[in-house]
Amino acid sequence: ADGYYEYTMSECVYSTSDYSDMVFLQSYSFNKVVDVQFNSTVGKFVGYTEEGVKYAENFNKDQAYLQQLKAQVDTVCRPNAQLLDSAVRDKA
Image (cartoon, rainbow, N blue to C red; front, side, top):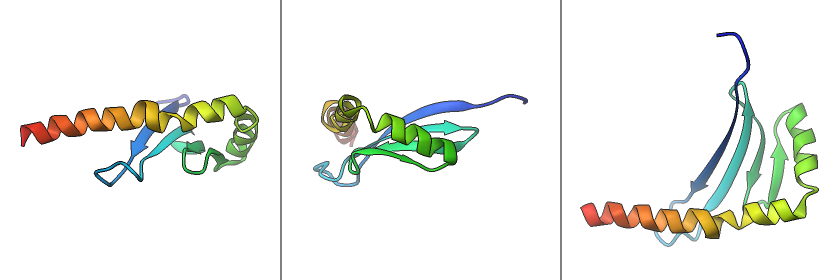
């Protein structure tokens, strides 16, 4: 019960069948509070806490890392969504 809980969560979020609104999110949380989050639509990290703002400033200095995360929509999200959606449609 005592201690700290830190985790990272990556999500692909979309609501249209053509995936045109797909967004890749990567959140860093501490004790269930999101400190900082990357959003592929925004194209950078945004801090939500005092520490998160510091993290965002540092992450956003690394243009190569930001480009890599932006690319996740096309390299990870869309292919996996297509695969999973077709598996669901094939079961119907």
